[in-house]
Length: 132
Picture 1 (spheres, rainbow, N blue to C red):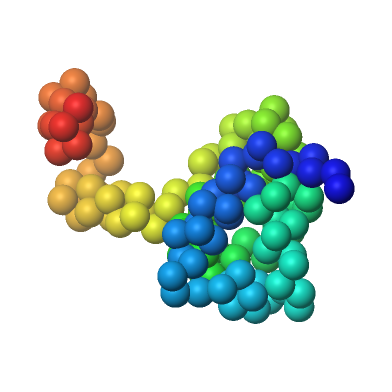
Picture 2 (cartoon, rainbow, N blue to C red):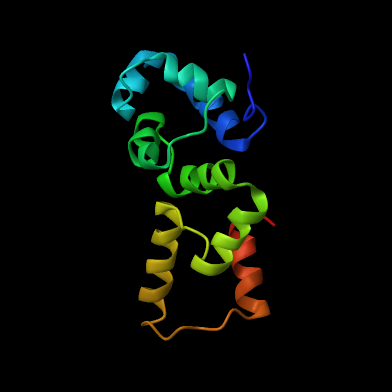
C-alpha cells in the first residue's frame, strides 16, 4: 500500500490526536464526527495513504479537538506542497488559531485599538510571560 503523505505534519498530527483521544473516542467515532462514511478513512489519513480533504478540515479539527486554523495550515501544506503553501501564506497571511485571535483581541482592547508598535520592551515583556 502506497503512503505518499506518511511523513507530513498533517498525518502525524492526526495519528497523535487519535492516540491521545483513544481513551474517550474510537477511530470510528472520530471518523463519524468528521463526516466520513467509513472509519477506515482515519487509518488512511494517519498512515498517509490519503491527503486530508480541505472541505473536511473544520469537522475533522472538531472531532480531533485541535484548532481548525492549525489543521488547515498543515492540510494546505500537504495538499499543495511546502513552497506553494508558503505562497498562500504570503498572499493571505498565516491563519490565526482561536487562542491567537484571543490574544489579538486583548491587545486591541488593552491598547484602545491604537495599533501599538512592537518595541523591544513590549517584545521582552511578552517573551517574559512565556519564560523566554
